[in-house]
Length: 72
Image (cartoon, rainbow, N blue to C red; front, side, top):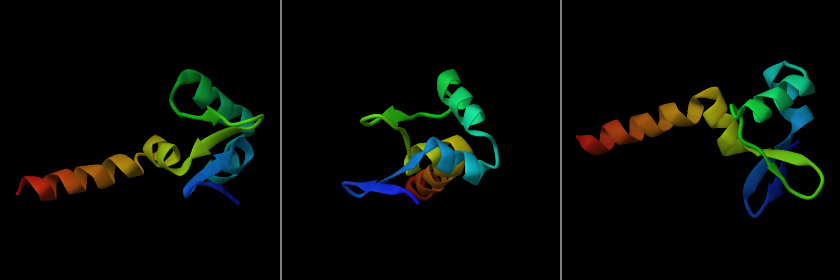
């Protein structure tokens, strides 16, 4: 279950790993490679819902739709 901080959903590495059906070590590798953005807040490393969507390509598709509609 994501943690809400000031209205922003944050996921832990194990939560993201479970959602992506990969190991936590793979998620850490994505972060280290710069493919997935994450922040350390206190002790845990957290991934925002926005960063997860960008990693999956969902956020970019939504932004593209808004841009195309706005250009018309």
